[in-house]
Image (tube, rainbow, N blue to C red):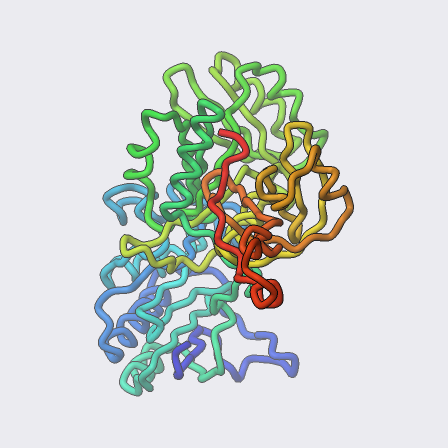
Length: 438
């Protein structure tokens, strides 16, 4: 974080009570006039003093929960004409010149419904908070900018850190990137299900939906906004009555609708809007209902787009799904590694399933033992704890193959070698992974 952080406001610090509450006459909304221009001039002065000529948009948010409600909502959230590509241009990592950055600050001061952090390589930050408080951080003291800010009639105060500095939801969570493994899994999922839906969240509370088939995955991929959060959902319901029946009695949901021409739109509604929203599903090709509450209606798996160099720089996180947790576990496994687990099932077709840390791995019949046997139950039993070697990890099909015999001594190595070899058997050879099913 920048070393020099200042809180800047139109409120005189002398007009505060002992609890720090402002007691003066200044309004907490923008005047859309000279005071607002003073804020923007102050931001420009700090940027010039710090040698900053462009800003990076971080963690953009649109509408809904970022609207403080102090001013009436504005069509377009104050982003109109700022991005040639439309709202999708308001994405994490987008670089904008200072002039556009100032217009974003103006939109946030006016509480238009769009919000973001503005940064420059971690050396310069601009945050707009509630009640017309502005937080500017810089690696340089920017004394000329401070003087300019005071001359504008604003009050800068040195503080330790901005209250709007980024903090992850879960610092220990490892975010899945939309890398080659992700796209291979998505291709395989589409081939199994024939079609799935991809939700592209390019800013908080702003998303686009895509129906993926074998023929269009790469086309959709090429058009995704940088650093988007991606969620893969099962195909929508073509039975609209069933989709409507999936509505809860109350709560906040997102209704996804696919028109006959393939156009996909979504609307977030609560129980007071259910009737109007469902009436709009008449004539839809397909539809679905997704709960907006954490832990409900989770997608199949999620990811965040890395930058073009493959590095994941987006700091926001997706809500982890069981599929994401499996991915995180599989990333810890390597061929030749030894794992311990519990036998859960001996299938009739001969594959033994073993729980290794909450993930089900499999042992094929040839990998159970060097010695001949009539049935897997002659070698192993349900509930037995075993140690096995990892033969292979298939990230696409999310499969792990194990070998129990790899941890046993190969009896054929001791045949005819005499007592010295019997006392010092050679290490077992690596076995090749075998597929349990296609």
